[in-house]
Amino acid sequence: MPTVIVFIVIFLTVWLQGQIHFVLRPDLVLILTVILSVKLKKEKAVTWAFLSGWFSDALFSFGFINTFSKTTVVGLAVFLKKYLMWPEMQLAAFLVLVITPVSKLIEMFLLKGFYSENVPWWPILGVTVINLILTPLIFYLLDRPIQSENE
Amino acid sequence: MSYRFLLVLLLVVSLLLNVPQISRSRPVQLARAGTQALFYPFNSIPSMLLNGIKSFIRLRQVERDNEELRLKLSAALAENRTLDSVIAENNRLNRVLNFGVAFGYQLIPARVIGRSGDTWLEQITINKGFAHGLRSGQTVVNREGLVGRVKEVSRFTSRVELITSPGLSISAVLPRTQTFGMVSGGYGSILKLRYVQEAASVEAGEAVVAGAGSQNIAPHVPLGRVKRVERSVEMLFQDIEVKPLVDLSKLDVVFICRR
Image (cartoon, rainbow over all chains, first blue to last red; front, side):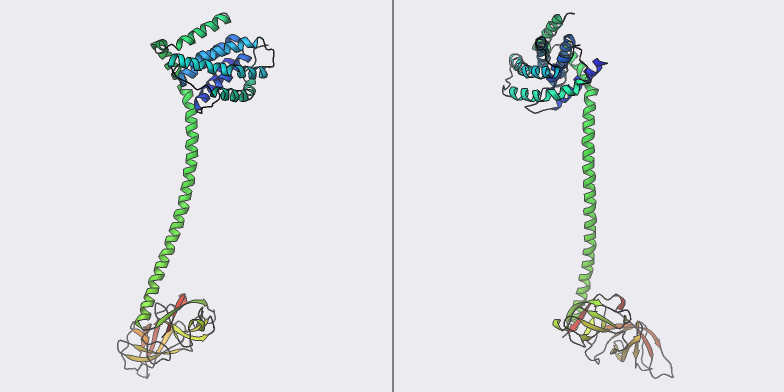
């Protein structure tokens, strides 16, 4: 049952992300994957990150940039989580703060490297701030449906 | 499967997926298409819901527009009816004006502002007085014919004695035979044409107009039509009933003839 709930949440998030077309748009999938990395076991977290990236790419983009970047940053989040014994919400916010620029930089380099596409760097700061603002809200929304598996 | 192995596997797979040769390969394209097909119903439901909501909002807008247009149509129809009424009034006034010009009078329009129940067929009050050039004794007409005569004049209003009033007697003539007589009121809504000799030819339905002999009454103004004629050898004069041309129960605008 939790797997179904997580799948539905990921699907809705991916769909919602696909409906936002501003330049400075939050990366909802990234926030979700970070929250999942905080709440779920690391194997599940990284698998869901891969799948959510895949879904994003399959539905709304032409390459597989998100698949790689989301898997990478969740791997990083899982690594950092070991060293930060903070409450989940603060931990999620901190990880989003750290990971959003990393994720965007990875996407920038991948786009440049594989598709020769230049992406401006300046939205990274804005997206980071927006993500940081939205993280507590999304965390509270998902706190009840997605039970923590860390205990 | 250990976490490290899984992570490395997924990273390698996801990195390789970005290699153009691999991402364009048939298995990857099939997997992508499969994902899209799997998600299609779920992806389309929110879109359908959104479109449904948008359609509903548009429908509400259309309903509001429809209501607004209905109101505008009603207003336009009401305006149209008013314009019809205005056109009819204009035609009526034109006829009266032509009537006035034909008889060489200047017509002063006036509106009926008062009428008493006990003197319904005797007098009316109009909204013009000597300030507007009205004088006692002037002829009052409407588009149909003779209405009466100005009896009393104040500064801004006047009282008009109707042709059916018992106090008014008017010289009249039957144009067909040039037979003269005297039309008198006091018989309800009917007039009596008196002093027409027994031998004179008078037929029901023939026209009666004002004669030249009446004091202040404009001659040749249509007055009525013969309704009934009664002759008797014992009587010196015929008993003739005349129906006025003017419907005195529907007086609204009248005109005062001024030379």
